[in-house]
Length: 325
Image (cartoon, rainbow, N blue to C red; front, top):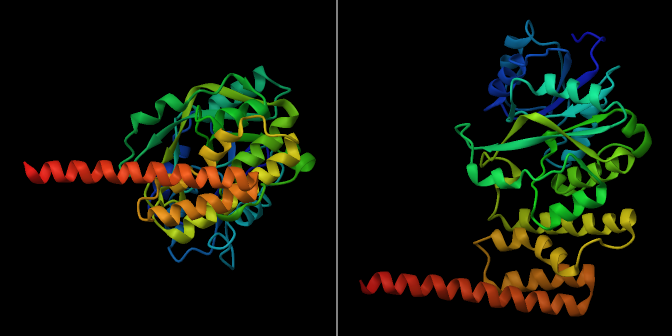
């Protein structure tokens, strides 16, 4: 059971067992243990408690296994019901069952809170790790958060490809839920965290905590790693479309050029190597037309067709040259 003198609640919506021990080890190793840990088991078919029970002596854990699985159909709803587990803590950190953090993250959090008592949305820089927990260095260049970032600046930096952002790197004051509501719900939770941080940042912006990193895992089993599944691709595109519609309700007008919106919306389409040129062109037309109108839809479809044709011709040329050698 958790003690109620902690100001910080770390919440893990859990389903996968594979890296859970490593996640809990990183929490056990925190130099400051003034936090409560809430674990919401999404009715996993794996025995998560077998892993968790080994940490109940060292960590202040409250564990709940839900009677039904929500994450498979509505991941954001599962996140939100896990938030309901939190009791009297002031701050909430939504973490995950396969990521880790530096040993001084909690300590750095409290230092930041003490130095910035009026701030309500805090952020850690991120190291991206692989299946073996080795850092993928190519992501280092995307830790470009300014010390204090507005909601508009965050949106622009994300769309322009200047930053990456994952749900685990943010800690927010519980009063923001009372003011703005819980996580914004898009299918697959795609863009849900971005929308929520934009919503919360309207209060006091985003303040980055210095001197500590969280470690987000590109595991091959999370939704971000799935590039070839057509159904998942369409759901991601639909979620992005709904995200941009939602953005207009916040900003009224998009604070970036339409060309950047098109590029970012179609990024998942570009990364898919299974679809044919015609399929990609049709999807580009459908979603951009729906968001920005017929002219932009036709232009996007043409540009996708042109780029994909160029990629395939280049591949064919290299293949033929290699064959002739």
